Image 1 (tube, rainbow, N blue to C red):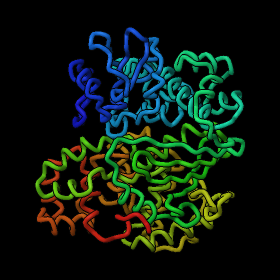
Image 2 (cartoon, rainbow, N blue to C red; image 1 turned 180 degrees about the vertical axis):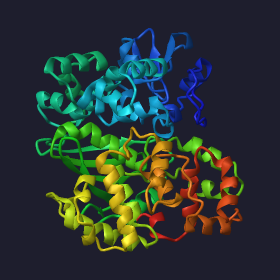
Image 3 (cartoon, rainbow, N blue to C red; image 1 turned 120 degrees about the vertical axis):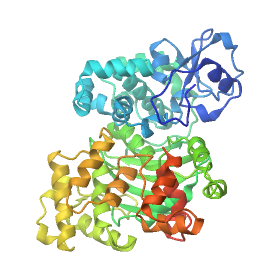
Length: 499
């Protein structure tokens, strides 16, 4: 079985440890690997509630797509296709991880394997070879497994006609949709719907209600507190116990409401085009860091005796991320050396002046955050901010608009960070906060951050950036999570769920 605490390239599955995880029904490893049963030709998650098969009848695969490619069907009890994704694709920075993040973002469905290869700067053959070597399936099979999961979600939770389900899930034809559903779930689409609970969303307005699973524990305080406290008026809000925001998506736009729960995050999402469902779910999971492995993270951080009490008191902290990397980079610049309230005010002005208006059926949200092209066209003199900050912002949006700076899920994190530091007005703090929250680097660290240094001093940790960085070597590869625990020692609103 994979070593969940390793930051290096994933080793082969270890049969003995995989068998032990299945026999103990260890939910921590759901999504890390899948158990295929040779006698029944069914594949399950490690925590499947059914009686575990005999060890000699088990074989193990690193992905649901590999199970499906080998001819196994998804278990109807444990629904292995609905597990949290492997945490590796978020914390790793190599080609396979970048490819997996792009596949989750729907790139193969929209642009094909050539489009995936072009974004990564490798040949399609190289990408196929590396994905097969590590996951037992190529990009087409991995994208097909994702389409099947989306189809199942729409079949079971909406009343949409099957033809619309097939189209929304990304299938090119009804026949392919029917064949895939039968092959993966051993049921026809109509039978799958008949087995599901009766309560379904109408679907015709493009609004869906679903659950986003995660690995426990999850501490919602800093996660939703940060998003709510920094919410940009018109784009984000906290309402009735949910974080709501607008989404710019490949085929249209959406409005999502995310509600923290004990066993899942509730997700109510309205889309202008249902083809964006898979991408919207992927981006919401990324925003909330739901595919993280909190047990592995906390185990490493608990090894520092001065951090251990913070981890023990409130385990499972996540890193609040973003649904739009370019948006976050702009907001990071607006937040340089100003308060949270001031940063929100600056961002709200940009949104009102240059964001794309949209209708929110519930009211409260009014715009999409302006994209780099829109901001690059703005007269710099019209920006109400100091000249130096204005130069930093205009240079950033210019680089994002012309493609010389890439911050998407396919970005090479080290290269992107180096490119950011070359821009005027960008120091380590700005580059590292973008690395942490936009690029998704789990090891990004902010030793110069005032809140981090204040927390370090109060805990007895070194307070100077150089000494704190040296101490934090033991926290690798999870230093971004250490930042969340350090920030949590403060009484700032970002650390608490709104009342």
